[in-house]
Length: 395
Image (cartoon, rainbow, N blue to C red):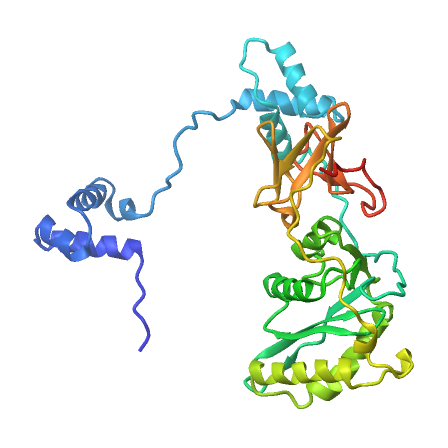
């Protein structure tokens, strides 16, 4: 049986009909669940305008206290047509000089008028496109770790498993193989923190440009995970998009993992993780590797001498000020909110004036971008992982 549909207009008509049938206002209002004030309002509208008075009325106010007079708006558009290359500040100044008797609108109001009439040319923001970084070829353990997610697969209970794997580049030692429910950052943080505590910190970590290692829409692909690595003093290495051979040693391990630990898949995560743990033990301690002259990875790998630590906030003695990025990824300075990057939320950045009313934003040893007095966002600089700022304090 279908539901009986009704709307506010039908309910008002039924309410008025109940009153016209002789029911008291109090009883009708009680049956319809409205106050008597509302009931009298509806009935009076019916008496004044008939059925048409029961239609929904616009809630738009009759006047706006701060609405710009149409004469001023017309003058703004006139100046823009006369001087098409002028922006809001110059048009506002011209308005003040021509009509000193009126209260001048704010620059933002003038800009809003121009924008509303399609007279503002929006600058295209320079977007980050993943290109990869320079890659190293270390000959010692912990000089470089490789991390990636092996392709997800379906468990017997119809849930997807996303194996996160971490290996040492030099010794091929498999540091971790954890089956996760998704590629969310929160799961990756937990695994990497456990590995860091057990094996220490590497010099660099090589990944692809996918989440959670990178963020396609953020500043230079920075994600919260990669920002955390930078804070720990770990360099970032990223392969070029569409070039998995640049992480070939790790991908070769994935092929072995797929053959020996995922086909067929286990029923649930606990059973699958047990197979992963057995694979890690065999891969490191029992499986000879031809690329290692038939040695085991465990015979070559030694933990890092760099212990895991929680870093102190960075200091910027050669910058004008140090600012903590808000949770929403903004820099609050002088009453302004400058959009930066949510991946840097909670981090401390340095701000320094490099030209007249142009400021540079830096994070640790990397220049991120610039902002001025007009734009409330940071425009990215070029290749921040090459351009260095002045040395930070060692205090």
